[in-house]
Image (tube, rainbow, N blue to C red; front, side, top):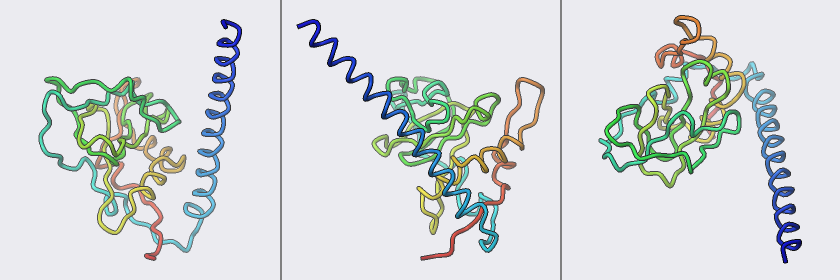
Amino acid sequence: EQHRIVGLLREIESNSDELISLVERCSSLIDAIFQYYVWSDESLNQKPINQIAEINPKVVSLSEDDPFIPMEAIDPWTQQIVLSRIEKKGPRGGVRACGGDILMARITPCLENGKISQVPISIAKCGGSTEFIVFRALDGTDQQFLYHLITSRVFHSQAAGTMSGSTGRQRASASDVGRILVPILPPM
């Protein structure tokens, strides 16, 4: 029985490793598609991202029992929030977000490490680290398009390029990030 269970656990580990690899390949493919069809298309108009997204939008007040997403809950480069690392807000402050909003780290080294994710739709409202910038698509912009823009390596590197401050404590400001030009797809 132990051998059978160990065999099942090995199969699960193998499948898990294959799924992680598949997610990484899909992420690379999406980034390549965005690079080729969106960022490299010189025929597309460009606008500052703050014209297509609300940055640090207002959210109704939070209770101490609402979820709180600390920086440690975002897995670098996978754009995934580790649900087991979500905490209760408690008395702390921070940013506010709703399901579907995009969280992007604004402090070094988290921004450089790709700590960017989307709040699960199942979370109606939540708090988060003060070191996040929150993005929500404005009317006329698809939230998933915005998500792929922000998680693209091009946008990510431009956001990292806006960082300022003393060595080791550099931050990107929401206003500087808001001025980054992004390609706009024509309406459908």
